[in-house]
Image (cartoon, rainbow, N blue to C red):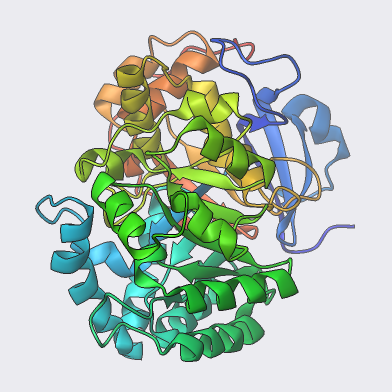
Length: 454
């Protein structure tokens, strides 16, 4: 039996079942690909997926069919590290990290003491995320509890799977942004009670970074994390050399930056450390041993001049690497733009990023690292119906390039390098159409039909 909230989408389908590896072709068994596929969704979940010709005889009479032939459906993109409260300072003239905080970030975040402002920016941020195909993100709010209430309320109205938390800072920030040490913890506990596990929402404890929290605040955050293993944690680590010097000065008894967080019990399987550029292999091994992940933020690292992330060094240690926009330091919310910048960073490092690794990272890879892969990140029966419809002919240039592509790998790479919000035809989350791009006005060029995922 089906319900009124049931429909089928016909398109090329791509999903990952495992890490595809670093070779030019994906590892056997890592990819699910249906050149002419059918995605049956019902009541916010995926009911079935398969080849269209095979699945059609099983469909009930009268089921709505949405025809997206010529387009590619993948799981919704996931952004592991982003600041919604910095949306309106994107593209501010470049500064390095510590100047960026003082000149742009802190003045902007003071505005989020206003619930009205937080409501407006939450809606604008979610509009932009859905426009670029991102259905889940791990989000920094400001230090004001109302910024979290506004963001979670907006996300829940749309039925989105989102992680977020109130920034904890009890020093080295303007008065309007700093917490009373225990007051910030009490605010976090109230927000956890109000929002964590409600609908598709999760709470991520959010000390900004070690320099803006006292040891007492970090220890208190660790105590909350130990008492509830269902919570997440997000912070920053080793982004900038000036930051490393500051941490060494503020925590003279700590052997290194990571040890500051380890001493407070903040490093675990649900911990995301943004950037992690200036680490050695011993520190990467410690992170991997505890199941933490590093959020690779390539456009931000390039924009702020922070350094070139060593993705291969992390992989050699078995350390999880996620992909993230880091807006507002990042220059684009688009996951495709993040992959483009990641490829460029990799080229400079001598470790090019394949399209298979990139799309796996934006979907199943990020979901697994964030402990969300039981719900999102794959197109499979029982999973939440979060997915994006990509159009390889979205722009004249992309259409021209896609028309010369003969394999799925080539098309994915073209999308990764030439795609932007225009390549996102539709974004669906929780089984609902959340964004639809206006129809393109060109399209005499069409991609070459592909039989497989080579």
